[in-house]
Amino acid sequence: MTDPTPNAWTTGAPSDVLDAAGGRYTVISADSHCGLPAPEYRDYLDAAFHADFDEYLAQQQAQRDEALTLNYDYIMGWETENEEGLRGSYDAAQRDKELDADGVAAEVMFADADAITGFASPPFGAGLGAGMIERPDLAFAGARAHNRFLVDFCATNPERRGGVALVPVAFDIDQGVAEVERLAGEPGIRGVMIPTMWRDKLPYNDAAYDPFWAACEAAGFPVHTHSGEAPREEMGDHIGIYLAEVVWWATRPMWHLLFSGAFERFPGLKFVVTEAAAYGPPTSCGEVGPVPRRNHRKDGAS
Image (cartoon, rainbow, N blue to C red):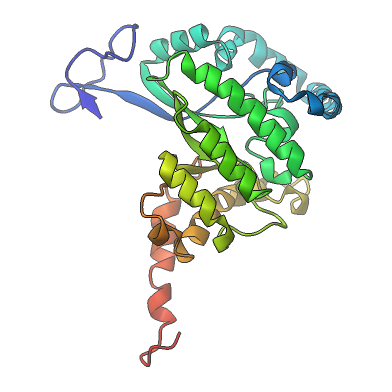
């Protein structure tokens, strides 16, 4: 997107990157992250889950301590050298300062702001790995806590922030619909993210999800998946397997909606796959494009 006029989105110095026509590019980040340090989600979490949250925080701290024993210099170096910038994951003024410095006009924001130790993630892991949560009530409690924070955070500059709310619909479709309807119209909330994996729950090709797709269509919320979750329990310590497969798991829900006819039943529904490698869709479309023709006989039977 280009704009020959000064960048009205930012208060920082105009970008000096020009397009062929001499206009400046307007840069919009399609994959940024925001979120509180884990303990600070308490104020956004329903009180009924505070005891569970204490247990979760203890587990998170233990994982962080283990990570520090293995990689202390890198973790502490990262957190110390980037202390000010990392504060922008929850401090609105600092975030705007970082965006201005980078020449970024606006952004799409997902949960899980800490990719190093995971200590800035929504309660109970309700962000990128929500499908791994065992209790549905914790999945939704954690999601709602983050969404409440996200509403407040986006409200500080809704024209510039595009918040992607968490809706773990695979755990409970009715609650998923209710959360979409609750968030519809909130300034800066631009879409929802669903779990990449549904595990032992209904797959997204099931028509039982139709009320949820309808609610997202009505709210104008694109439905997102974001890479991160994969069946790590099958992979052991072989990180290479995870890296090779994780983008496939993020893309997989799209085929379930496509071949189940969801996009035909809900023509206004939009689906977005994030951080799943740009080569994925063209390659996959080339592979599945011939499938209907290959499996359709001349007599009309399939």
